[in-house]
Image (tube, rainbow, N blue to C red):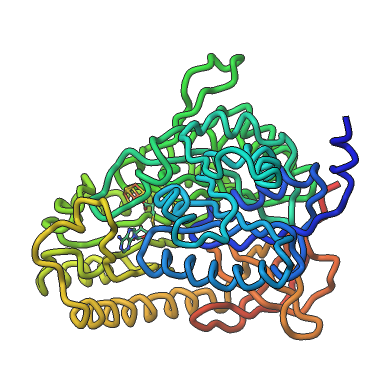
Length: 458
Ligand code: SAH
Ligand code: SF4
Ligand code: F3S
């Protein structure tokens, strides 16, 4: 068998990632799957034998980008004399399937988010020009079982997917169709992956899921094997040696249970940051979105979270111009933002997505109105973000140092509240937690002065 010979030949791999953190995680896992076949990352698509475009379908703009990217790659493939293989992965691959190959025949492979473990087999098939060029099955657990156990860490922070898919069916959203039904990984598997990351110097883990706080994975057999919640999982991961910081994203207000909230108060590894998308402040719109919560529910959750962890930084997502949204509905969103106070938030114009119920609703909001509302909301959110950052001035914060800053001698890291922090310090701080006094702030970052560094972990 000469498969080891082929395995040794170095081949260039370039993965272009769009969309959410789960796609970032998936791209890393594709690298892990392809490494034993001799694929090593290269700096640009021109040098690559295999280019994977990991796509996002969430808004129309995101999908359009994919087709323009593929147009560019087609030219490079021709210039390479056909040596380049082009694979399309992610949510557009899942949603459009064969249509992608029809629209862009230069595409060799199309694989949905649950098929990444089949990538080696698909590449082999493509090179022999036999069999299907499409894999869009929905067996999530099978994927996680088949992916390599080892992770290759890249710096002191890492993503770790613990949950995938969504059963909530918000009327605007494609995720339940592209990622499939909600499922949770087993605690043991997550712990094994987290330990492997910790052993490589990872200090901060972000647990990921499209609906991460709906997590309900099987506990270790010695703990009874029943399903655990995200709160239980966080407390457990916090005990892994070397893991000093835990984050999780993205949550749904309906699944924000009391134990998870309590963990923010009693587990010091839980970072004081919560990304809890609310989408709108109008109960009428929230109902039409099928969110299953009201603005008052959101305020009640935030009050509990703040009681458990008073300094918590709050983040959220908003959609403006959902079908039927009136000026009064939009004002209710602005009121919710004013009443809450966000450290950071992401806001989007509603984008009708094919196959989702909201796309068929009457009273779609005109583009100019969406633009005006988005501008007003973003101005308010920017003010809140600037104010939140300014409040840190004078404080002394623990900063996980992630790398060198842009200026000579400067280091870069993250505060507990997820802000970027720049300060002057030695390079051996990378991967360690430094104590930094904050002296300045702007919309997007903080500047500080090094006070001291914690001991490096052995
Ligand atoms: N699972 C996460 C979010 C997934 S998508 C959650 O439920 O919170 C990330 C964000 O994109 C959403 O929170 C929403 O604000 C936005 N989004 C999703 N579909 C959209 C659409 N059709 N138009 C505009 N924004 C959208
Ligand atoms: Fe989409 Fe709603 Fe599911 Fe979030 S909860 S992924 S917005 S359907
Ligand atoms: Fe986009 Fe899919 Fe993530 S649609 S936001 S890449 S789950």
